[in-house]
Length: 459
Image 1 (cartoon, rainbow, N blue to C red):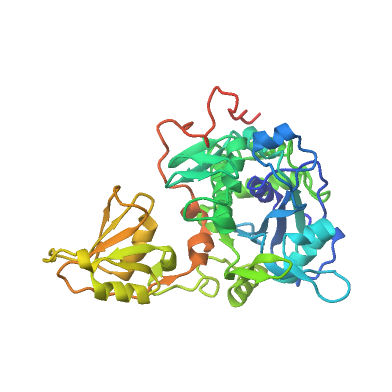
Image 2 (image 1 turned 180 degrees about the vertical axis):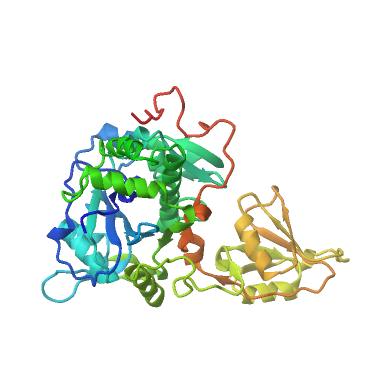
């Protein structure tokens, strides 16, 4: 298909960078093994390469270290046949798959390794083989142009309910909603060692949120509400983003205009459902294994041009869901029976019944939690229905349960990391909801008006 969703692809590319001088690779150059389907599929990848980046640039962008010449970020963008729905699916870079197009015995490895073996064409073919979908267009990105793209568009919204700090990426922002310049937005989308959401799954959700809020802001500002304004926005993007040879300016304007009229509840974001989060493979390392049934349902829905949100085959509905993993929560419980029941439910429990008060207080259990332990406290509360939650800044990183005179019922909870980090969700639910701070430039993650890192604005 000639008319692709490249406008959405370009916005998606902001989550991982822009071209580092490499050529876009057309999907027509790759062997096509997918079964096709309705709508249009675009594969967007960000390459982890430091080639051509000076030492000073590495320090400024906080991208030191050695690149792997592999894909660091991968997103599959599906635009429906009627242009009334967009679905963006992040494919974790450590996904363990079988490569396409290799001679001899089948070869498997991390999906990001396909690029090191055969560049863009093998990456496309491998994704087609793993998903069963035809990739209509491919877009390849790198590190260095990211900040220019974000700055040219006037900055990107980043948000967090709690402070985020990651020494590896240089991220250091306070709670709230911030307008970030390109440099700080890059740190936000690259961070992998933060709080309760370490690793790639938490990172790709932040990438999705940046793309979502950028699209929403461009729409609200009227940048996509007509042919002239859309053309101006597209030309701004094309200063730092390159498309394949089959896509002209008219295609981008037409698609960008369609995106500007797309309802938030018709734009979907998801991450491929995972079954094994630390599958060790000799010579490969720690990998992610897709949940076979749920990922197959995801690709089937996209191939049939159906919504992915609300599909219980992709995301089953748990009877008593928990936002965090009970095994990673340290709980102090002052009742031996309740402590034993919670331990049997998978929590890491310390029985403090020896120091419990001789006379129990009236009412239900009280769950006290330290700063930053809100989600863990919510998981404990799911196991102890009717409990009262109480913040306690004097506590260490634990959740403390004080049992009262009321009988306690301990319920089994279901923790599904796919729900916490990548469940299919519409844009209106994914959008930043935390309040903006009084000064949008607060913290290292924000753009500072009038300073050297101020976004340049759209021109």
